[in-house]
Each structure stands twice: as C-alpha cells, then as structure tokens.
Image (cartoon, rainbow, N blue to C red; front, top):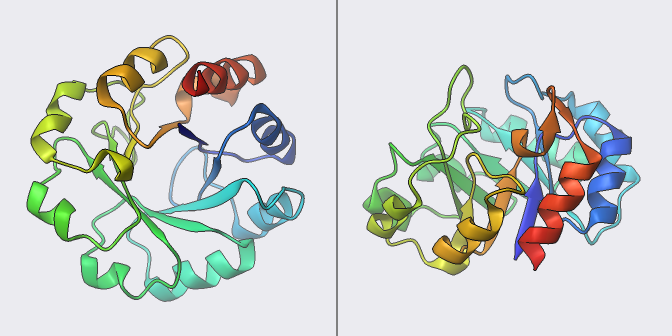
Length: 199
C-alpha cells in the first residue's frame, strides 16, 4: 500500500514522514493554508532520500510554470487538483496524478485522462482540494477506476484507514489534515497512519 502524506511545509516534518515509511510526500503550490514557496520546497527535497517520491500539488496553473517549479524542486510527480484538461496534462513533462472530487468525477473523463494515478477526494471547502471529511466509498464502484491506478483521499485517519483499504483496495492512500493536531502535522498521528495503512 502506497502512502502519501501531503501538505508538508518544514524539513523536520518531512524527515518524520520519510522515517515513518511514507512512499510519497506532497507539497502544495496552490492557494491553501499549507501552501509552500517553491524555493522552500526545494530546500526540503535536497535533504530527502530518492526513495521517497516528491509530489507537487497544483491548481489551474500553466504547464510552463508547473514544469519550471517541478524542475526547481526535483519533483517526481505532478498532482493536478483543478480543472486541468487532458490537453494541458500532455504538456507537462512529469508523471501525473489527476485529482477528481467524488461529486464531479465522470467515468469517461477519468478513463481518457493521461495520468499514472487517479486520486479521488471529498468535495472541497474553502480551497480546491478535499474538505478533510470522508465520502461514501461505495460511490467509487460506479467510476470503474482500475484499482492499481486509484489513490484514495478525503477524511482518512488512523481511525478509519484499515476499513478504507479493506473496502476500496486502492493502490495508495493520501492524507493531510487527518495527521494534524490544531492545523499542524502530528508525529504520532503520522506514524500511526502509516503503520495501519501498511499492515
């Protein structure tokens, strides 16, 4: 089970995530309370092992800007979390994770999208991206996404991750607010989440 911890803003948290055994680490370059400047993300990635894959989260950014930031930060994947078209995705020179909100996901659009992974999230609140609340996982059956391409997000935590994996059987899981306390990444929650996800 691949595990992505998203919304990383400090080197200390990044090291905790790496040591806990995460497969992916996510940096948010779109408007968010977890937004990070590309130069700061680049300083963090310099200190990480090549074994942990670095993901940049973008919302409705130009392909040129995405490629430029990806190069600076040494990203491994680009996560598109806005209204990006398949044509735009083809202009990006990095592997892609395309995020869809469960309430806007269309099987035909998903099937035709040029990407390595499909991430399904809860409907967003103030910003694009998830609300940190779970959605009804049974809805995924209607989307016919190959499970080896599916990353499950939205309201996951150490309390429900085992159940989510058993029911959905995705390739990976993605968490941000579910491993936070008072808006800050929590070492114990990160370790618990990864342990349960990997069991």
